[in-house]
Image (cartoon, rainbow, N blue to C red):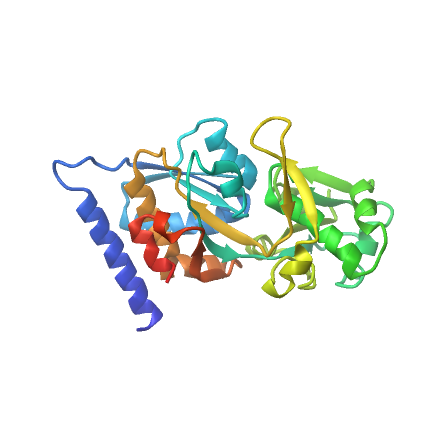
Length: 319
């Protein structure tokens, strides 16, 4: 069976599901579906929702992008109603949402870290995979990273620097990058793009998908440090960063690992079936094609923490 036929079957199944769900005498699904997601999912998930709305035009999707930790805390700390949560790091879901808000997640896509720049960047004609860390430390060079307490891209940048110190065998590299005058921090990684394009930053640490989606130039970093490869997962794990925990004053220690995006549905969302239909569309062939086209390779079959806890209609993607 080719991909087009599989996509048609998936769409027919979703259409049938909605028809079955919305029947006279039964509770009607809400026309609104709030979706909170990582900033790096903004473009692909907007495209997924756009195609979803071609099937279900009456559903009003209310999407909000932010750093993944901030995204989750909108649900767990601010008590906001949300149908779908998308995190750039699957580990944040169990650490911040289990057991009160959900007890499952699905890992559906991967990514990697890159160093972005533009034609305006200082030394852009020199920078490469072997000298990027030296160029960042030159006088007057400004580089950006996300806030590790709000955005996984932020703590992954710090992990990358720790791994680079060992990989390139440059003592004190991590300390020098963190304490440099040009080190600039913003709430989430996508906030750095405007600064990069305006010339206020020379370089920014981003996901490959963000670079692809925004047409940015980038240095492709070695697999040993870019957090993309299972082959180097043991080495990645030697990098550790502390971030804010569930309660004020608490911290969580995170270890480096291959980048894995995850999705879940908060259990207190009143229209569970509507949220499941959207996640079903995300995970079908059409949704995963959109992810791949945006530089975020899909993980097939998907990975879950506990198949028995998944909504029944989503279990087919695990096998």
